[in-house]
Length: 152
Image: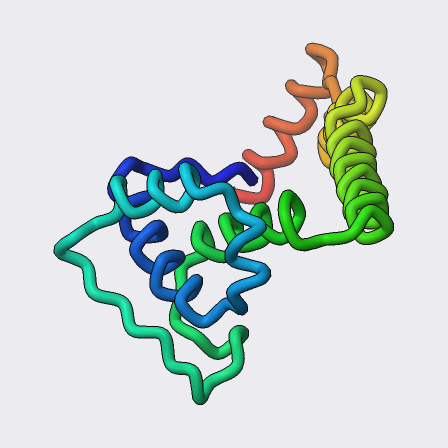
């Protein structure tokens, strides 16, 4: 499922990201273009306060999913070496392939018709259990006479 983020979501994430970048080494920080960092600062939410707790590890920080995505993108673009980038591409392609296969299986046309056929067969089985005897005119008269005789 694709998440859709608002301008406000990005502004809060930029605020979190700027705070987190304060704890990144100078050498890694210098790998990020200055205009990108200026853009984060320009578009951050000035009313939102985020405090990074350096005593906690990254996984236990209270940061948004979007901020994690932004940090992952920074890692891929500026900090990962070529081998890591290649491995990330392979993993992304595999994940997309798996999602496509899952959707293809789910929405196969023959699969849809198979489900409909099974439902129809179930309905036929249910109705076939009811035996309907058609009686001719004489059988009906005989049955009525039998009922009358039992009453008298």
